[in-house]
Length: 449
Ligand code: DLL
Image (cartoon, rainbow, N blue to C red; front, top):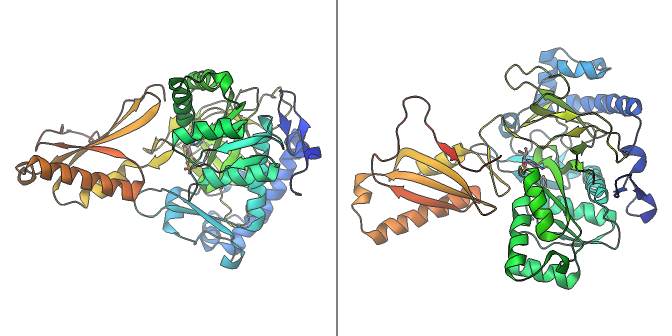
């Protein structure tokens, strides 16, 4: 793919643009053929270069060449986060290290994070998929994207960044936080597009209002929000607060990051980039594919990733697939907003947190008893997390100052491991409710998600 040239951009039927018009509006039967062709190449890559997949495919009795239609997908083995963790850091790579130009990572289950590798071609493809995402919101060269996703191992910051550069708009790598500066830069530089989590977009809107700024005082026109679940009600509030079209974008580190699916200006579900990912919906209990339109667990198979092909990766996100044609003219199926997860992963301000990670930190501190509770709530539009921990008699007999110091130590330890600011509340011995069955470790008071 060549880099940015405005001629590539063609209008869609919804007021946005298509970055790769031919690919984005490919007739369904051609798309299906392309998927099967790419699936076979991908399976050959996985079979030849990833010992884990060779073993798995041999055990399933499937050779890459056996796959000739979408129905054959069901014969392929699943991949889970645990598989990635077991092959940490680079055991799932299908290319030697001298061809890997970037590594990202996401917080995983207890212990190791999951790593994601990219070849040069993978980075270019990722850039194209993000360029599609931004173009669908009408962004083009001359626009200025204020990228307030976090930069670093998280895929949001650099993912949006490279895609914006590929599209040819101006990108401001401001990263997250520092609201005062965000609002100043937005107005001084004339940002026309914003990318950040939906909760931060809401927060920015409120902060602008508190400073007497009206939506029409802010130059931004469109926002690209994802990395955490959000509702259509929140969309309306973000749109009113900032005076923008707020679009949903979806992705996960294991699939390369954002750029897996995106909304067009019809705002009627997220278009899955089906020429690069095959999506299935399965029943998380029986693992059988579900009929179209039913809510189940989303499973993705990568079609073009060289460095890290993944077969039937279980995202744990629960949603449904919409295959009715979209008015924008794109031919890909869409996914509904994820309505929950089939595991216990919490998403706190865009950061993935497994309760087991918190438990591990707590249990490494001898003064803490094995009784704790994680309370997640929403203050205004931001998630807050409290960790209630029971401490032993000895500690409770200490002075107030000692207790506060201890509390800060636990908070710092949680921050070091999970990168989240949790308020630690120390509880007297035997005050956290005991359970007769499964312990209720997590109390999620956020509504509507
Ligand atoms: O959150 C990638 C991303 C960055 C997506 C920026 C969009 C924008 P992870 O940190 O690996 O990757 O988290 C992936 O976040 O399995 C979902 O549970 C959740 N998630 C991501 N996007 C959405 C969304 C990035 N639009 C996990 N709606 C996924 C709901 C989302 N949940």
